[in-house]
Length: 115
Image 1: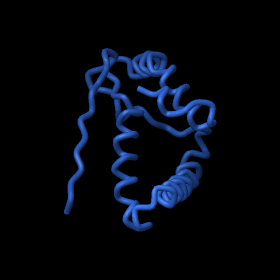
Image 2: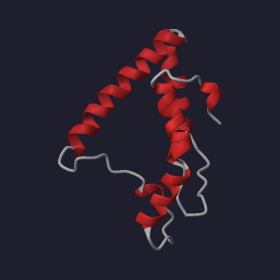
Image 3: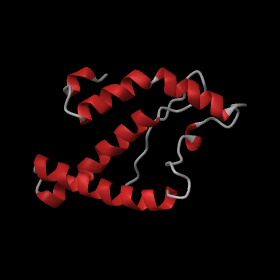
Image 4: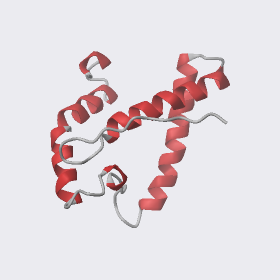
């Protein structure tokens, strides 16, 4: 069995960067999916998109009663006194990068805009 390990850093608010972790996990997922389509980049992207869409349907069903997708709680250090405030500060500090990623998704900019 292969074990994947990732380094998870916490910022000054005690919140881990979920986007950086997601990017690392997505990278691994892409490498895991590629052999199923002979390493073809376009087909790998299609397979990844299909898998993500199927999972989003499941997540959507699970979170329908809440009206949002719960998250971030797992990315907060236990010793942080006020999780909500720490998360708000973290999200504010990373807002520009999040907007850059969304701009890439909309086709407004290329990936060269990302750190």
